[in-house]
Length: 113
Length: 116
Image 1 (tube, rainbow over the protein chains, first blue to last red):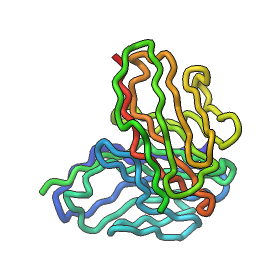
Image 2: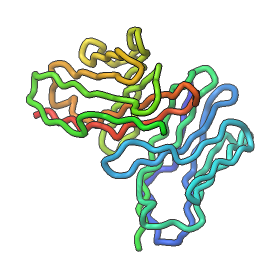
Image 3: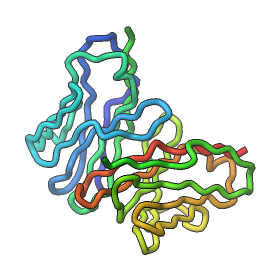
Image 4: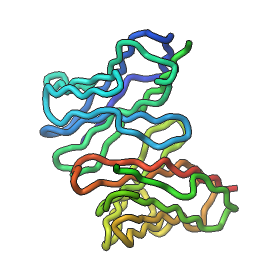
């Protein structure tokens, strides 16, 4: 079945540091890939997405590229801010699963001033 | 657009009572809504898929008689936790699909349930 694996957290960075959160997936065919962000006590917000190989999703300085050859969708940001502190979830929606999402474990990011 | 609300945002109840959580799509019609459960510091676990006008589809291991789902209209789905026990304490999150944006779910802010 479909699965998503994220790098283990928590991740702690200083403000303006470079961020990478690794995400790899297992799925048949060509899934759609997503990054969601969850701020404390809140639901999930879609951060970015990519629907086909080599697509790059981007939003609020975050980027992720759909790499079919490595089955990866790593999240990056060049300069993090304190306000980026949150939990980040990688997810996929498989071709055969309709719109059902499979989530990774989540990665807690803390950015210190 | 594509705002999903949940009510209540938090609830505390006694063991043995039932609790109803509402999920509403405020500015779009949602034929499909999803209900998730999230334990502290863990990922979201899909509980069930709610389709307007039909019975919900439950994931393996989720008791349908305990977690009653009703999707009576295109903008409202409800989750009722029946005879709640402390182990049902969790963060419950719903999401909805906007028909014109197939394959993208819009999430509600979640409901924190604490069963004493």
